[in-house]
Amino acid sequence: MSYTTLKAAKEDAGKLSLGNGKMPGSTFATDAFACKVGDKLAKVKGSVCDSCYARKLQKLRPSVNQGWSNNQRLAVQLISTAPHKWIAAMVFQVEKAAIKSGQPWHRWFDSGDLDSVEMLVSICKVAKATPHIKHWLPTREMGIVKAYRKQGGSIPRNLRVRLSATMVNDTPVTSAKRLGVSTSTVHTKGLPYVGHQCPAPDQGGNCGDCRTCWNSSINVSYRKH
Image (cartoon, rainbow, N blue to C red; front, side, top):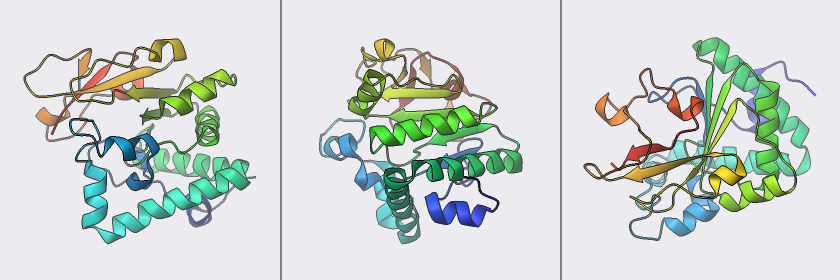
C-alpha cells in the first residue's frame, strides 16, 4: 500500500500539521478529550493535565476541535481495520512534511495521546519506515507502553518515547528505564527539577535550536505555565 497524494493520505488517516510554530517539523494532534489517563488526570488538582491547554483550545476554537477530533476518529478506525493503510498514509505525510519544511523532526500528540497498543505498534512502524526522521512521542499511557513491551515490541532508535510524570513537581517515572523509554516532568518556576530544563519559556515559547526532546535519553523538565 502506498500513497501518491497528500489529500488521499489525510482523508484516510488524519492530517499532519506544520502549523505548530513552537517547534520544528511536523506534528500530529488528536482529541484531548479522548485521552484515557489524561481524562482522569484533568480532574485532579495539581496534575500535569490539570488546566490542559489543548482542551482549552478545543473549547475556544471549533475548527481546531473539529480537526483534532477528526484525526482521532480516522486514526482509531483505520488502525483497527487496516493498520498497514494508516502506516502508509503517515509515512507519506511525515516524509512530505520533512521535505517541505527542511526539518527532519516529528512530534506525535501535541494534543491527545496513545489510544491503544495497536496505535503504538503502528507509530513504531512509521518511525522504522522513516529512519532519516527523528520522532518524539510524549505519553502518560504507561499501561499501553508496558503492554507493548511485554508482547515483545521494540522502540526504533529514531523514536524517543517519553513517559510523563503525573503530578507537577513529581519525580521521573521510575519504571521507564526498565521499559527502555525516556521520561519528562513538569516543575514550578523556581523549584528544583531533574535533568534538562526546557528552554522554551525563556525564548519566546519556541524550541529554538534545542532538540533534546527528540535526541537525548535525559529527563526533560517543562516549566509549568
